[in-house]
Amino acid sequence: MGFWWYEVRLAAGVASLALVAGWLVGRPSVGLLVGALVYAGWQGMRLLRLLRWLQGGRLAEPPELPGVWGELAYLAHSQYLRARRRQRRLGERLKRYEATAAALPDAAVVLGRDHGIQWLNEAACRLLHLDARRDVGQRVDNLLRHPDFVAYLHGGDYAEPLVLSGLVEEDRVLQLHIVPYGQDQRLLVARDITRMHRLEAMRRDFVANVSHELRTPLAVMAGYLETLLEGSLDAGQRQALEAMQQQTTRMKHLVEDLLTISRLETGELEERDAPVDVPALLRSMLEQARRLSGEKQHELSLQADESLWLLGHERYLYSAFFNLVVNAVQYTPAGGRIELRWQRCDEGACFEVCDTGIGIPAQAIPRLTERFYRVDPGRSRAAGGTGLGLSIVKHVLIHHEGELQVDSTPGAGSTFRCVFPARRVCGPNDPQ
Image 1 (cartoon, rainbow, N blue to C red):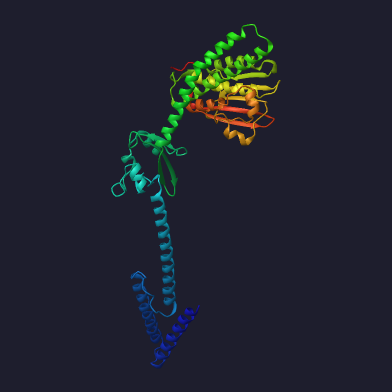
Image 2: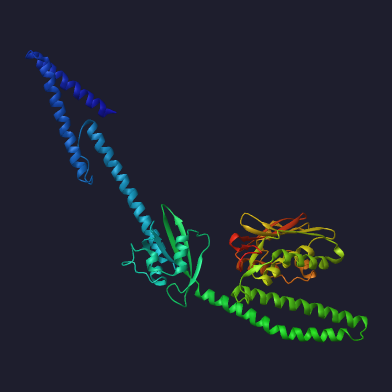
């Protein structure tokens, strides 16, 4: 605080000298006025030096100014040096980030509020055929004009990536993901998944071809086994042939399930979407479930909204729904309760299968729709399941824009819920 005492002493000294000089000439007030003008002029000169230094960019050392002006110059210079050091650190960090982003194998494009390109890396030039010098400042939807990409960009729903072929090259498959950040900025990330896509297609073709080729030998084996079982056999021979027939039937179901999944994955469905009478479908399913329950004597019930139909494929919807019903019958103890519900919900329409069965551990629920995943492998095989039922359910729902939701507590039963969007809902009297 010494600079304040300097200013006080200076003002007091000037005032004293002016007052003495004025008293000597007999005009004290004039002396004080002259002293005030001298003091103001002196302060103005120091202020002018400070302004000139500030206008020079503050690169030089601050001027030697006594009092408050010197303190202001010192503080301004210190703040400037700290800001420069901070700016230099930020600049170095930004350069490291840009170098890191530039070295990424995935394309990265920074988009502004109007979808204009602000920055892009080398991979973006290679994968998206953009030019860093020419295209910065251009709208990305003017450069990448594929309708699906434009709809994804303007849709605003970036929860899931967009897989697209033919964006820049016909034989290249790209996975595009937009990440919003900052103030109305977006990061467009593109990854080349052509090789992965081809490997997945080869895997699907292999499974489909092998499954198709297995159908004939299995049919022949089943036919011969059925013929042999009609003959006269002793107990041991009949038991062996019945075990062979049971395993052959199981293999046939496995092949059929694999072919169903293959058709759903590739989109090779024979029928087009059409209104499906879901209540009638479920009534037929309920009768089959009662026959399947047999000696277990489950308490089966159905609640269905007769005015609620669904736009889709009847055969595949039946397969998905019946898989859920079969699981409920198989894993619900004798005398248990199984409820089927078809009703409207906030999303559109909902099919529920609620049981009082053995339940599912929480850690197993996320993996239920994986192929061949079994919560209890021994019990699942004993029940005759293929391990593909819930995978079929998942693929059918994907094709129908639906979602599978599972609530379960071990020992207290499970609820499997198939939720369909409102755009799939229709009525019995709607035009086809």
